Figure 1 (cartoon, rainbow, N blue to C red):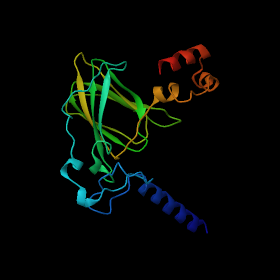
Figure 2: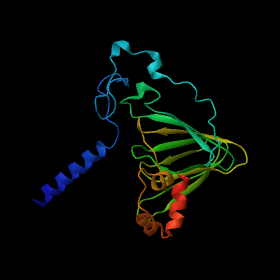
Figure 3: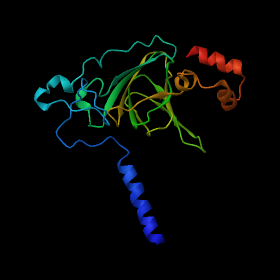
Figure 4: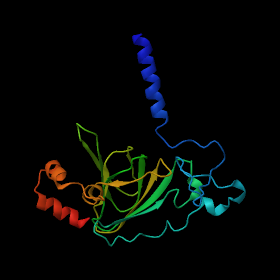
Amino acid sequence: MAFQFLFLAFIAITCSIALATDPSSLQDFCVADPVRSVPVNGLVCKDPKFVEANDFSFSGLHLAGNTSNTVGSHVTPVSVAQIAGLNTLGISIARIDYAPWGVNSPHTHPRASEVLTVLEGSLQVGFITSHPENRLITKILHVGDVFVFPVGLLHFQRNIGYGNAVAIAALSSQNPGVVTIANAVFGSNPDISSDVLTRAFQVDKDTIYNFQSRF
């Protein structure tokens, strides 16, 4: 009986891991149809007869993003929202531009791992392991260097140079999602109760109100 229980537990864990990525396509392609609003896990397929080359292409990734903002970075995503042909393929990319000393704020991708490649400049990158270790794994990257951020883990990048920096991120989902920690915690709609945040961050309510006013 104990063996049967362990065997079933192993099967359940294996299946859960196998299902932890975007579903595989059962046909050549499934170009997203943004017009139809049937609720599915992904997007409804466009009639193949009406599929064209533009459904599989995107122009503009060579253009620098506007980094004139409070964090000094800009992300140009290329996900299924930009290329309908990515639907069901389980991949996407993004260009990230950094002003001098700009940061891509601590965030997570709930549905994707990320492979970051530096094209220009130098970046400090890092991610935090899960509780209870909360270990910071960090490294300085230069042009041509590659770094991996595991799915769901909090991570960041920072330009450590006096010039602009550029990176390309490849992600293991057509729709990786992003949860920027500061925006989510202090800019939620409606606000998280100050009673919760004062205890979580061990600060007074005025500090919490100040943070919330910024987001």
